[in-house]
Length: 566
Image (cartoon, rainbow, N blue to C red):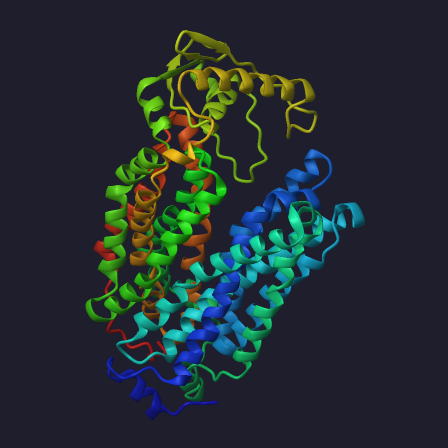
Protein backbone atom coordinates (compact mmCIF):
# COMPACT_ATOMS: atom_id res chain seq x y z
CA UNK A 1 0.00 0.00 0.00
CA UNK A 2 1.44 3.36 -0.98
CA UNK A 3 1.78 6.04 1.62
CA UNK A 4 1.13 9.68 0.94
CA UNK A 5 3.79 12.35 1.09
CA UNK A 6 1.88 14.01 3.88
CA UNK A 7 1.99 10.88 6.00
CA UNK A 8 5.68 10.51 5.36
CA UNK A 9 6.26 14.09 6.46
CA UNK A 10 4.25 13.49 9.58
CA UNK A 11 6.42 10.51 10.47
CA UNK A 12 9.55 12.49 9.73
CA UNK A 13 8.61 15.18 12.19
CA UNK A 14 6.73 13.00 14.67
CA UNK A 15 7.42 13.55 18.34
CA UNK A 16 9.63 11.04 20.16
CA UNK A 17 7.14 10.89 23.03
CA UNK A 18 4.27 9.52 20.88
CA UNK A 19 3.24 6.01 22.03
CA UNK A 20 4.12 3.06 19.81
CA UNK A 21 1.22 1.93 17.63
CA UNK A 22 -0.03 -1.61 16.96
CA UNK A 23 1.27 -1.38 13.38
CA UNK A 24 4.71 -0.34 14.61
CA UNK A 25 4.79 -3.28 17.03
CA UNK A 26 3.90 -5.57 14.16
CA UNK A 27 6.72 -4.12 12.03
CA UNK A 28 9.28 -4.65 14.80
CA UNK A 29 8.10 -8.18 15.57
CA UNK A 30 7.95 -9.32 11.94
CA UNK A 31 11.37 -7.91 11.16
CA UNK A 32 13.02 -9.23 14.32
CA UNK A 33 11.73 -12.75 13.80
CA UNK A 34 13.97 -13.18 10.77
CA UNK A 35 17.00 -12.26 12.83
CA UNK A 36 15.93 -14.82 15.42
CA UNK A 37 16.22 -17.33 12.57
CA UNK A 38 19.78 -16.18 11.96
CA UNK A 39 20.83 -16.72 15.56
CA UNK A 40 18.82 -19.91 16.03
CA UNK A 41 20.58 -21.44 13.04
CA UNK A 42 23.98 -20.05 14.10
CA UNK A 43 23.78 -21.72 17.48
CA UNK A 44 22.39 -24.95 16.01
CA UNK A 45 25.35 -25.35 13.68
CA UNK A 46 27.79 -24.35 16.39
CA UNK A 47 26.33 -26.74 18.97
CA UNK A 48 25.82 -29.65 16.59
CA UNK A 49 28.88 -29.23 14.37
CA UNK A 50 30.58 -32.45 15.50
CA UNK A 51 27.43 -34.51 14.92
CA UNK A 52 26.76 -32.91 11.53
CA UNK A 53 30.36 -33.56 10.46
CA UNK A 54 30.00 -37.27 11.25
CA UNK A 55 26.73 -37.45 9.33
CA UNK A 56 27.83 -35.63 6.16
CA UNK A 57 31.60 -35.16 5.91
CA UNK A 58 32.78 -38.75 5.58
CA UNK A 59 35.37 -39.63 2.97
CA UNK A 60 38.98 -39.14 2.04
CA UNK A 61 40.91 -36.21 3.60
CA UNK A 62 40.91 -34.21 0.34
CA UNK A 63 37.12 -34.33 0.04
CA UNK A 64 36.67 -33.54 3.72
CA UNK A 65 38.97 -30.53 3.43
CA UNK A 66 37.15 -29.15 0.37
CA UNK A 67 33.73 -29.43 1.99
CA UNK A 68 34.96 -27.99 5.28
CA UNK A 69 36.27 -24.99 3.34
CA UNK A 70 32.96 -24.58 1.50
CA UNK A 71 30.94 -24.87 4.70
CA UNK A 72 33.13 -22.18 6.25
CA UNK A 73 32.68 -19.98 3.18
CA UNK A 74 28.92 -20.34 3.46
CA UNK A 75 29.01 -19.20 7.06
CA UNK A 76 31.12 -16.08 6.58
CA UNK A 77 32.51 -15.35 3.14
CA UNK A 78 29.32 -15.37 1.06
CA UNK A 79 27.28 -13.04 3.26
CA UNK A 80 28.58 -9.82 1.66
CA UNK A 81 27.63 -11.25 -1.74
CA UNK A 82 24.13 -11.86 -0.43
CA UNK A 83 24.11 -8.25 0.70
CA UNK A 84 24.87 -7.18 -2.88
CA UNK A 85 22.27 -9.45 -4.48
CA UNK A 86 19.38 -8.75 -2.13
CA UNK A 87 20.39 -5.18 -1.41
CA UNK A 88 20.07 -4.46 -5.13
CA UNK A 89 16.63 -6.08 -5.23
CA UNK A 90 15.55 -4.22 -2.11
CA UNK A 91 16.46 -0.88 -3.63
CA UNK A 92 14.79 -1.71 -6.94
CA UNK A 93 11.57 -3.57 -6.09
CA UNK A 94 11.07 -2.77 -2.40
CA UNK A 95 12.01 -3.78 1.11
CA UNK A 96 8.97 -5.91 1.92
CA UNK A 97 9.18 -8.40 -0.93
CA UNK A 98 12.94 -8.70 -0.84
CA UNK A 99 13.24 -9.67 2.76
CA UNK A 100 10.21 -11.93 2.36
CA UNK A 101 12.35 -13.81 -0.18
CA UNK A 102 15.34 -13.91 2.18
CA UNK A 103 13.31 -15.37 5.05
CA UNK A 104 11.87 -18.06 2.76
CA UNK A 105 15.32 -19.10 1.51
CA UNK A 106 16.85 -19.00 4.95
CA UNK A 107 14.03 -20.86 6.68
CA UNK A 108 13.62 -23.48 3.96
CA UNK A 109 17.37 -24.18 3.96
CA UNK A 110 17.37 -24.75 7.72
CA UNK A 111 14.33 -27.03 7.51
CA UNK A 112 15.70 -29.12 4.62
CA UNK A 113 18.89 -29.85 6.59
CA UNK A 114 16.66 -31.74 9.03
CA UNK A 115 15.40 -33.95 6.19
CA UNK A 116 18.66 -34.42 4.30
CA UNK A 117 19.97 -38.03 4.19
CA UNK A 118 23.52 -38.52 5.41
CA UNK A 119 26.67 -39.69 3.64
CA UNK A 120 25.90 -43.33 4.47
CA UNK A 121 22.63 -43.10 2.52
CA UNK A 122 23.40 -41.00 -0.57
CA UNK A 123 27.19 -40.73 -0.57
CA UNK A 124 28.95 -37.65 -1.90
CA UNK A 125 25.59 -36.02 -2.71
CA UNK A 126 25.02 -35.47 1.04
CA UNK A 127 27.85 -32.96 1.65
CA UNK A 128 27.24 -31.34 -1.76
CA UNK A 129 23.59 -30.65 -0.92
CA UNK A 130 24.44 -29.56 2.64
CA UNK A 131 27.05 -27.07 1.44
CA UNK A 132 24.64 -25.80 -1.23
CA UNK A 133 22.02 -25.18 1.45
CA UNK A 134 24.58 -23.42 3.61
CA UNK A 135 25.62 -21.17 0.72
CA UNK A 136 21.98 -20.32 -0.03
CA UNK A 137 21.47 -19.59 3.63
CA UNK A 138 24.56 -17.41 3.78
CA UNK A 139 23.38 -15.43 0.77
CA UNK A 140 19.93 -14.98 2.31
CA UNK A 141 21.45 -13.86 5.61
CA UNK A 142 23.35 -11.22 3.67
CA UNK A 143 20.04 -9.68 2.68
CA UNK A 144 18.01 -10.39 5.80
CA UNK A 145 19.64 -8.04 8.30
CA UNK A 146 19.84 -5.08 5.93
CA UNK A 147 16.22 -5.59 4.96
CA UNK A 148 15.03 -5.84 8.54
CA UNK A 149 17.00 -2.81 9.72
CA UNK A 150 15.98 -0.69 6.75
CA UNK A 151 12.32 -1.69 6.99
CA UNK A 152 12.06 -0.95 10.71
CA UNK A 153 13.98 2.34 10.50
CA UNK A 154 11.86 3.58 7.61
CA UNK A 155 8.70 2.85 9.62
CA UNK A 156 10.00 4.52 12.77
CA UNK A 157 9.00 8.10 13.69
CA UNK A 158 11.79 10.66 13.78
CA UNK A 159 13.40 10.47 17.20
CA UNK A 160 12.69 6.75 17.66
CA UNK A 161 14.81 5.06 15.00
CA UNK A 162 17.45 3.98 17.50
CA UNK A 163 14.88 2.54 19.89
CA UNK A 164 12.94 0.76 17.14
CA UNK A 165 15.93 -0.84 15.40
CA UNK A 166 17.51 -1.83 18.72
CA UNK A 167 14.81 -4.49 19.08
CA UNK A 168 16.38 -6.31 16.13
CA UNK A 169 19.67 -6.42 18.04
CA UNK A 170 18.09 -8.24 21.02
CA UNK A 171 17.25 -11.31 18.98
CA UNK A 172 20.67 -12.95 19.54
CA UNK A 173 19.57 -13.79 23.08
CA UNK A 174 16.24 -15.20 21.94
CA UNK A 175 17.90 -17.27 19.22
CA UNK A 176 20.41 -18.61 21.73
CA UNK A 177 17.79 -19.58 24.31
CA UNK A 178 15.51 -21.06 21.68
CA UNK A 179 18.23 -23.26 20.20
CA UNK A 180 19.46 -24.28 23.65
CA UNK A 181 15.94 -25.16 24.79
CA UNK A 182 15.16 -27.23 21.70
CA UNK A 183 18.51 -29.09 21.76
CA UNK A 184 18.38 -29.84 25.49
CA UNK A 185 14.69 -30.75 25.36
CA UNK A 186 15.24 -33.17 22.48
CA UNK A 187 18.26 -34.74 24.18
CA UNK A 188 16.31 -35.27 27.39
CA UNK A 189 13.31 -36.68 25.54
CA UNK A 190 15.08 -39.31 23.41
CA UNK A 191 18.43 -39.82 25.13
CA UNK A 192 21.99 -39.18 23.98
CA UNK A 193 22.22 -42.21 21.71
CA UNK A 194 18.99 -41.43 19.88
CA UNK A 195 19.93 -37.77 19.61
CA UNK A 196 23.28 -38.57 17.97
CA UNK A 197 21.62 -41.02 15.58
CA UNK A 198 18.61 -38.99 14.42
CA UNK A 199 17.37 -36.61 17.13
CA UNK A 200 19.79 -33.86 16.03
CA UNK A 201 17.43 -33.33 13.09
CA UNK A 202 14.55 -32.20 15.32
CA UNK A 203 15.92 -28.67 16.06
CA UNK A 204 16.25 -28.05 12.32
CA UNK A 205 12.78 -29.38 11.58
CA UNK A 206 10.99 -27.32 14.24
CA UNK A 207 12.36 -24.18 12.60
CA UNK A 208 9.45 -24.51 10.17
CA UNK A 209 7.23 -23.08 12.92
CA UNK A 210 9.31 -19.89 13.00
CA UNK A 211 9.26 -19.78 9.23
CA UNK A 212 5.48 -20.13 9.02
CA UNK A 213 4.82 -17.39 11.57
CA UNK A 214 7.32 -15.02 9.98
CA UNK A 215 6.02 -15.48 6.42
CA UNK A 216 2.40 -15.12 7.51
CA UNK A 217 3.12 -11.87 9.30
CA UNK A 218 5.34 -10.44 6.56
CA UNK A 219 2.74 -11.12 3.88
CA UNK A 220 0.35 -8.83 5.75
CA UNK A 221 2.84 -5.96 6.00
CA UNK A 222 2.87 -2.79 3.92
CA UNK A 223 5.88 -1.46 2.04
CA UNK A 224 8.09 0.92 4.01
CA UNK A 225 6.89 4.55 3.91
CA UNK A 226 10.21 5.92 2.64
CA UNK A 227 10.41 3.47 -0.28
CA UNK A 228 6.71 3.87 -1.11
CA UNK A 229 7.10 7.67 -1.23
CA UNK A 230 10.21 7.42 -3.39
CA UNK A 231 8.54 4.94 -5.75
CA UNK A 232 5.47 7.16 -6.07
CA UNK A 233 7.75 10.03 -7.06
CA UNK A 234 9.59 7.87 -9.63
CA UNK A 235 12.96 8.20 -7.90
CA UNK A 236 13.88 4.53 -7.40
CA UNK A 237 17.34 3.50 -8.52
CA UNK A 238 17.74 1.57 -11.77
CA UNK A 239 21.30 0.51 -10.91
CA UNK A 240 21.84 0.48 -7.11
CA UNK A 241 25.21 -1.29 -7.31
CA UNK A 242 26.65 1.25 -9.73
CA UNK A 243 25.33 4.15 -7.69
CA UNK A 244 26.47 2.75 -4.34
CA UNK A 245 29.93 1.58 -5.32
CA UNK A 246 30.65 3.24 -8.65
CA UNK A 247 30.29 6.83 -7.43
CA UNK A 248 32.96 8.06 -5.02
CA UNK A 249 30.59 10.23 -2.96
CA UNK A 250 28.68 7.07 -1.98
CA UNK A 251 31.57 4.60 -2.00
CA UNK A 252 33.57 6.65 0.51
CA UNK A 253 30.64 6.47 2.93
CA UNK A 254 30.47 2.69 2.49
CA UNK A 255 34.20 2.44 3.27
CA UNK A 256 33.85 4.71 6.31
CA UNK A 257 30.86 2.67 7.53
CA UNK A 258 33.09 -0.40 7.43
CA UNK A 259 36.37 0.84 8.90
CA UNK A 260 34.91 3.61 11.08
CA UNK A 261 31.97 1.65 12.53
CA UNK A 262 31.17 -2.00 11.74
CA UNK A 263 34.74 -3.32 11.82
CA UNK A 264 35.15 -2.31 15.47
CA UNK A 265 31.55 -3.10 16.37
CA UNK A 266 32.00 -6.63 15.00
CA UNK A 267 35.11 -7.54 16.99
CA UNK A 268 33.62 -6.17 20.21
CA UNK A 269 30.45 -8.15 19.54
CA UNK A 270 32.27 -11.40 18.78
CA UNK A 271 34.66 -10.98 21.71
CA UNK A 272 31.90 -10.32 24.23
CA UNK A 273 29.64 -13.18 23.23
CA UNK A 274 31.57 -15.81 21.27
CA UNK A 275 35.25 -15.46 22.11
CA UNK A 276 34.37 -15.21 25.81
CA UNK A 277 32.56 -18.55 25.52
CA UNK A 278 35.44 -20.02 23.48
CA UNK A 279 37.91 -18.77 26.13
CA UNK A 280 35.97 -20.41 28.95
CA UNK A 281 35.67 -23.73 27.12
CA UNK A 282 39.02 -24.04 25.35
CA UNK A 283 41.38 -22.06 27.57
CA UNK A 284 39.90 -22.24 31.07
CA UNK A 285 38.59 -25.81 30.49
CA UNK A 286 35.24 -25.07 32.13
CA UNK A 287 32.62 -27.72 31.33
CA UNK A 288 30.23 -26.79 28.55
CA UNK A 289 27.05 -26.84 30.67
CA UNK A 290 28.49 -24.41 33.24
CA UNK A 291 30.00 -22.12 30.59
CA UNK A 292 26.75 -21.99 28.61
CA UNK A 293 24.76 -21.32 31.76
CA UNK A 294 26.96 -18.41 32.80
CA UNK A 295 27.02 -16.78 29.35
CA UNK A 296 23.24 -17.30 29.07
CA UNK A 297 22.62 -15.50 32.37
CA UNK A 298 24.93 -12.66 31.31
CA UNK A 299 23.11 -12.33 27.99
CA UNK A 300 19.74 -12.34 29.72
CA UNK A 301 20.81 -9.60 32.14
CA UNK A 302 22.42 -7.44 29.46
CA UNK A 303 19.77 -7.74 26.72
CA UNK A 304 17.63 -4.79 27.93
CA UNK A 305 20.65 -2.55 27.40
CA UNK A 306 20.35 -2.98 23.62
CA UNK A 307 17.11 -1.02 23.92
CA UNK A 308 18.65 1.38 26.44
CA UNK A 309 21.58 2.36 24.22
CA UNK A 310 19.41 2.40 21.10
CA UNK A 311 17.03 4.81 22.83
CA UNK A 312 19.90 6.83 24.29
CA UNK A 313 21.32 7.27 20.79
CA UNK A 314 18.04 8.95 19.79
CA UNK A 315 18.74 11.60 22.41
CA UNK A 316 22.51 12.15 22.40
CA UNK A 317 23.62 10.68 19.07
CA UNK A 318 24.86 7.30 17.90
CA UNK A 319 28.46 7.85 16.91
CA UNK A 320 30.08 8.32 20.30
CA UNK A 321 28.08 5.56 21.99
CA UNK A 322 29.41 3.08 19.41
CA UNK A 323 32.96 4.44 19.43
CA UNK A 324 32.88 4.75 23.22
CA UNK A 325 31.98 1.09 23.50
CA UNK A 326 34.89 0.18 21.20
CA UNK A 327 37.32 2.31 23.23
CA UNK A 328 36.27 1.07 26.67
CA UNK A 329 36.35 -2.54 25.46
CA UNK A 330 39.84 -2.17 24.00
CA UNK A 331 41.16 -0.63 27.21
CA UNK A 332 39.69 -3.24 29.55
CA UNK A 333 39.87 -6.58 27.70
CA UNK A 334 43.17 -7.67 29.26
CA UNK A 335 42.12 -7.13 32.89
CA UNK A 336 38.64 -8.59 32.28
CA UNK A 337 39.92 -11.79 30.67
CA UNK A 338 42.56 -12.01 33.38
CA UNK A 339 39.73 -11.83 35.89
CA UNK A 340 37.89 -14.63 34.05
CA UNK A 341 40.96 -16.82 34.60
CA UNK A 342 41.22 -15.76 38.25
CA UNK A 343 37.60 -16.61 39.06
CA UNK A 344 37.11 -19.45 36.56
CA UNK A 345 40.27 -21.52 36.96
CA UNK A 346 42.53 -20.27 39.78
CA UNK A 347 44.74 -23.36 39.46
CA UNK A 348 45.56 -22.38 35.88
CA UNK A 349 46.29 -18.82 37.00
CA UNK A 350 48.76 -20.15 39.59
CA UNK A 351 50.43 -22.46 37.06
CA UNK A 352 50.86 -19.64 34.54
CA UNK A 353 52.60 -17.61 37.22
CA UNK A 354 54.70 -20.29 38.90
CA UNK A 355 55.49 -22.89 36.23
CA UNK A 356 57.14 -21.33 33.18
CA UNK A 357 57.54 -23.51 30.09
CA UNK A 358 60.16 -23.03 27.37
CA UNK A 359 60.13 -24.05 23.70
CA UNK A 360 63.57 -24.30 22.10
CA UNK A 361 63.25 -24.26 18.31
CA UNK A 362 64.61 -23.04 15.00
CA UNK A 363 62.61 -19.80 14.51
CA UNK A 364 62.20 -20.59 10.79
CA UNK A 365 60.16 -23.67 11.75
CA UNK A 366 57.66 -21.69 13.85
CA UNK A 367 54.71 -20.47 11.82
CA UNK A 368 51.62 -18.34 12.30
CA UNK A 369 49.03 -21.12 12.51
CA UNK A 370 46.00 -19.46 10.95
CA UNK A 371 43.58 -22.35 10.38
CA UNK A 372 40.48 -20.98 8.67
CA UNK A 373 38.61 -24.29 8.30
CA UNK A 374 39.94 -26.24 11.28
CA UNK A 375 41.38 -28.92 9.00
CA UNK A 376 44.81 -27.57 8.05
CA UNK A 377 47.85 -29.34 9.52
CA UNK A 378 51.17 -27.76 10.51
CA UNK A 379 53.86 -30.46 10.39
CA UNK A 380 56.99 -28.73 11.76
CA UNK A 381 58.25 -29.75 15.20
CA UNK A 382 57.87 -26.18 16.49
CA UNK A 383 54.26 -25.96 15.29
CA UNK A 384 53.38 -29.32 16.81
CA UNK A 385 54.89 -28.26 20.14
CA UNK A 386 53.34 -24.78 20.29
CA UNK A 387 49.87 -25.84 19.11
CA UNK A 388 49.84 -28.66 21.69
CA UNK A 389 50.81 -26.25 24.46
CA UNK A 390 48.25 -23.66 23.37
CA UNK A 391 45.49 -26.27 23.23
CA UNK A 392 46.41 -27.15 26.82
CA UNK A 393 46.32 -23.48 27.91
CA UNK A 394 50.02 -23.62 28.76
CA UNK A 395 51.99 -20.37 28.47
CA UNK A 396 55.51 -20.60 27.15
CA UNK A 397 58.47 -18.58 25.99
CA UNK A 398 60.51 -19.31 22.87
CA UNK A 399 64.27 -19.67 22.75
CA UNK A 400 65.88 -19.53 19.31
CA UNK A 401 67.98 -22.53 18.30
CA UNK A 402 70.32 -23.11 15.34
CA UNK A 403 68.80 -23.84 11.94
CA UNK A 404 67.56 -27.39 11.60
CA UNK A 405 67.15 -27.97 15.33
CA UNK A 406 64.18 -30.17 16.25
CA UNK A 407 61.97 -28.33 18.73
CA UNK A 408 61.91 -29.39 22.37
CA UNK A 409 59.76 -28.36 25.33
CA UNK A 410 61.19 -27.81 28.80
CA UNK A 411 58.72 -28.19 31.68
CA UNK A 412 60.64 -27.72 34.90
CA UNK A 413 63.56 -30.14 34.69
CA UNK A 414 61.83 -32.37 32.13
CA UNK A 415 62.64 -32.00 28.41
CA UNK A 416 60.29 -33.43 25.77
CA UNK A 417 61.51 -33.53 22.19
CA UNK A 418 59.02 -32.93 19.38
CA UNK A 419 59.38 -34.13 15.78
CA UNK A 420 58.69 -33.13 12.19
CA UNK A 421 55.54 -34.89 10.98
CA UNK A 422 55.16 -36.56 7.60
CA UNK A 423 52.16 -35.59 5.48
CA UNK A 424 49.99 -37.90 3.41
CA UNK A 425 50.37 -37.89 -0.38
CA UNK A 426 47.63 -35.27 -0.82
CA UNK A 427 49.41 -32.95 1.63
CA UNK A 428 46.31 -32.45 3.77
CA UNK A 429 46.89 -34.68 6.78
CA UNK A 430 49.55 -36.43 8.87
CA UNK A 431 50.30 -40.01 7.88
CA UNK A 432 49.42 -42.84 10.26
CA UNK A 433 52.86 -42.99 11.88
CA UNK A 434 52.91 -39.23 12.51
CA UNK A 435 49.42 -39.31 13.99
CA UNK A 436 50.59 -41.89 16.52
CA UNK A 437 53.67 -39.82 17.33
CA UNK A 438 51.51 -36.70 17.84
CA UNK A 439 49.24 -38.61 20.21
CA UNK A 440 52.24 -39.95 22.17
CA UNK A 441 53.85 -36.49 22.27
CA UNK A 442 50.68 -34.86 23.56
CA UNK A 443 50.25 -37.56 26.19
CA UNK A 444 53.81 -37.10 27.48
CA UNK A 445 53.50 -33.31 27.34
CA UNK A 446 50.16 -33.41 29.13
CA UNK A 447 51.64 -35.51 31.93
CA UNK A 448 54.54 -33.11 32.37
CA UNK A 449 52.38 -29.97 32.41
CA UNK A 450 49.90 -31.60 34.78
CA UNK A 451 52.74 -32.42 37.14
CA UNK A 452 53.82 -28.77 36.91
CA UNK A 453 50.38 -27.66 38.10
CA UNK A 454 48.50 -27.04 34.84
CA UNK A 455 44.99 -28.48 35.33
CA UNK A 456 43.39 -30.62 32.64
CA UNK A 457 40.03 -29.01 33.47
CA UNK A 458 38.61 -26.38 35.78
CA UNK A 459 37.58 -27.53 39.25
CA UNK A 460 33.80 -26.87 39.47
CA UNK A 461 34.11 -26.13 43.19
CA UNK A 462 36.69 -23.40 42.51
CA UNK A 463 34.59 -21.50 39.94
CA UNK A 464 33.24 -18.26 41.38
CA UNK A 465 30.07 -18.20 39.32
CA UNK A 466 28.64 -14.85 40.50
CA UNK A 467 31.89 -13.05 39.65
CA UNK A 468 32.15 -14.87 36.32
CA UNK A 469 28.63 -13.79 35.41
CA UNK A 470 29.44 -10.21 36.43
CA UNK A 471 32.52 -10.12 34.18
CA UNK A 472 30.62 -11.70 31.30
CA UNK A 473 27.82 -9.18 31.84
CA UNK A 474 30.34 -6.33 31.47
CA UNK A 475 31.67 -7.87 28.25
CA UNK A 476 28.15 -8.18 26.86
CA UNK A 477 27.35 -4.65 28.05
CA UNK A 478 30.07 -3.44 25.67
CA UNK A 479 28.29 -5.43 22.96
CA UNK A 480 25.02 -3.58 23.66
CA UNK A 481 26.81 -0.23 23.39
CA UNK A 482 28.27 -0.91 19.95
CA UNK A 483 25.42 -3.00 18.57
CA UNK A 484 22.31 -1.29 19.94
CA UNK A 485 22.61 1.91 17.83
CA UNK A 486 24.44 0.47 14.78
CA UNK A 487 21.39 -0.41 12.67
CA UNK A 488 19.88 3.07 12.93
CA UNK A 489 23.21 4.72 12.15
CA UNK A 490 23.86 2.60 9.06
CA UNK A 491 20.37 3.31 7.75
CA UNK A 492 20.83 7.04 8.30
CA UNK A 493 24.19 7.17 6.51
CA UNK A 494 22.74 6.43 3.06
CA UNK A 495 20.02 7.89 0.80
CA UNK A 496 16.79 5.94 0.36
CA UNK A 497 17.39 4.94 -3.27
CA UNK A 498 20.56 2.91 -2.44
CA UNK A 499 20.14 2.39 1.31
CA UNK A 500 19.50 -1.37 1.37
CA UNK A 501 22.51 -2.08 -0.86
CA UNK A 502 24.89 0.38 0.77
CA UNK A 503 24.31 -0.49 4.43
CA UNK A 504 24.23 -4.26 4.00
CA UNK A 505 27.70 -4.63 2.49
CA UNK A 506 29.79 -2.95 5.25
CA UNK A 507 27.70 -4.66 7.92
CA UNK A 508 28.33 -8.14 6.55
CA UNK A 509 31.98 -7.58 5.70
CA UNK A 510 32.51 -6.24 9.21
CA UNK A 511 30.59 -8.96 11.01
CA UNK A 512 31.14 -11.84 8.61
CA UNK A 513 34.84 -11.33 7.93
CA UNK A 514 36.40 -9.21 10.68
CA UNK A 515 34.17 -10.68 13.39
CA UNK A 516 33.88 -14.20 12.01
CA UNK A 517 37.64 -14.65 11.74
CA UNK A 518 38.24 -13.61 15.35
CA UNK A 519 38.42 -17.08 17.01
CA UNK A 520 40.82 -18.58 14.43
CA UNK A 521 43.00 -15.46 14.34
CA UNK A 522 43.09 -15.24 18.14
CA UNK A 523 44.13 -18.89 18.51
CA UNK A 524 46.89 -18.43 15.91
CA UNK A 525 48.17 -15.42 17.87
CA UNK A 526 48.12 -17.39 21.13
CA UNK A 527 50.03 -20.30 19.58
CA UNK A 528 52.52 -17.91 17.99
CA UNK A 529 53.29 -15.98 21.16
CA UNK A 530 52.68 -18.53 23.91
CA UNK A 531 50.43 -16.21 25.92
CA UNK A 532 46.79 -17.23 26.50
CA UNK A 533 45.75 -13.54 26.35
CA UNK A 534 47.71 -12.59 23.23
CA UNK A 535 44.72 -13.30 20.95
CA UNK A 536 43.00 -10.27 22.47
CA UNK A 537 45.32 -8.02 20.48
CA UNK A 538 43.24 -8.77 17.38
CA UNK A 539 39.97 -7.19 18.65
CA UNK A 540 41.88 -4.47 20.54
CA UNK A 541 43.79 -3.24 17.48
CA UNK A 542 40.71 -3.41 15.23
CA UNK A 543 38.53 -1.60 17.79
CA UNK A 544 41.10 1.14 18.35
CA UNK A 545 41.52 1.63 14.59
CA UNK A 546 37.75 2.10 14.33
CA UNK A 547 37.78 4.61 17.20
CA UNK A 548 40.42 6.73 15.46
CA UNK A 549 38.89 6.55 11.97
CA UNK A 550 35.33 6.98 13.22
CA UNK A 551 36.20 9.95 15.40
CA UNK A 552 38.02 11.75 12.60
CA UNK A 553 35.88 10.98 9.57
CA UNK A 554 32.42 9.59 10.44
CA UNK A 555 29.67 12.16 10.93
CA UNK A 556 26.80 11.92 13.42
CA UNK A 557 23.57 10.78 11.70
CA UNK A 558 20.83 11.10 14.33
CA UNK A 559 19.18 14.11 12.66
CA UNK A 560 19.57 12.94 9.05
CA UNK A 561 16.48 12.97 6.85
CA UNK A 562 16.04 9.32 5.85
CA UNK A 563 13.29 10.26 3.39
CA UNK A 564 15.79 11.94 1.10
CA UNK A 565 16.05 9.83 -2.07
CA UNK A 566 19.49 11.24 -2.93
